[in-house]
Length: 110
Image (tube, rainbow, N blue to C red; front, side):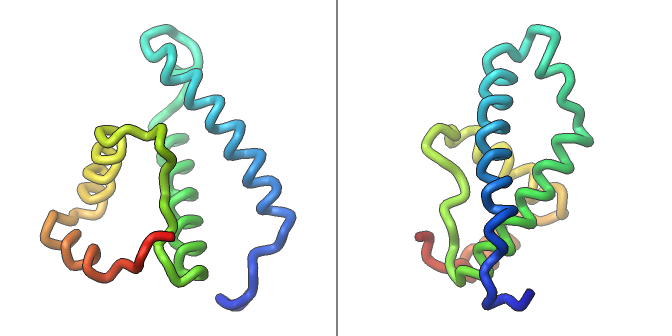
């Protein structure tokens, strides 16, 4: 598929269903973080796989759209967003200066 071709419709439908399931799952995990159960079953490896796939998807879709896409909804707290942003920078051995270079490259969110 070339960058100008839209993504096939079928996977998008599956992605919407998956996103709804993940929202419910995350709400349950966040609501009972100290109780054994769902939160205890989320492994670092599973979380890493999920975030990696979501990040690659975000990058591909925003590149195809030729604009930055707002990546989170209003329910994500500023603290949670910054915790993830810092973890992503550390994971790739980047620092705030590196981030500033990339930040100046970004397009307008839409």
